[in-house]
Image 1 (cartoon, rainbow, N blue to C red):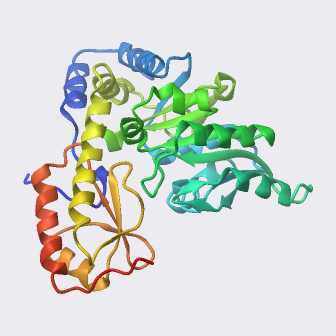
Image 2 (image 1 turned 135 degrees about the horizontal axis):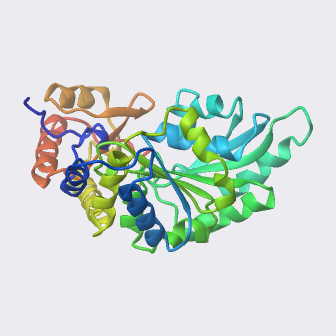
Length: 353
């Protein structure tokens, strides 16, 4: 079957990276215990403990929606509420799954700056209503890297977690692109997870080059009590769990997860720098991970799509997202840049507002 050319709509478009594929190939031979009692799942879990330098509980799910929703459900009762950014994936793109799996936990939206939650807004939101008639805040959900491609620094996370503790909130991190954030920060993962106050991380595997699968990592182990039952009930307990876990072994053993994420980030930077010379293009957010957000006129967006490029309208009518993946080639970025030059040659300068 012929494969399509590389695109910028999503890092989900990319294939399986070689390290994950080799590990999956190795795991496919012979028999192994089912439901996670296999050596591959044990090894992947231990590697995650090594990376985060702490004893944590690890579970594997098929996708990010399940990981986020089940993790949040484990933090809340149905009469509780979850605080998150206005653009958080758990609010805009999970089809109500967090509410469904928690039997009705309400999501409360916080104002953001560049996709990041402002720590001060936590107290404002929690204190607004404290009566019996309002769902009691119980958790806060952060995204790292954020939906707008920005990255929380460890100190920012610590400030947010401190505010969360003050009001009795657990801290959940949606890490669909955690690898890209880690590559950008260049810090030990513990520094921007459990040491900064994160209780549970949903570590994205699919977007960093795995065929399928996310890891739910509980740093506060008490919160993982009976989480295995949630996975089973939600259809997330893989009978042949080694095929979810083995690609993680391939990614984690020799640092491929960080190398591939760093490459994706570098390709986004290549695109960002190339676009900076075009007066008709306005970059909306800082380039910190593997995405570039642009404000494009309808004519420019239509022209690019007419040349075969795929990308998402992400914010309003003109906000467009260009996402680089682990396998994005420099030549692909350069072809896109050449087409940007073609379609904007006669376009007026972009507004700075």
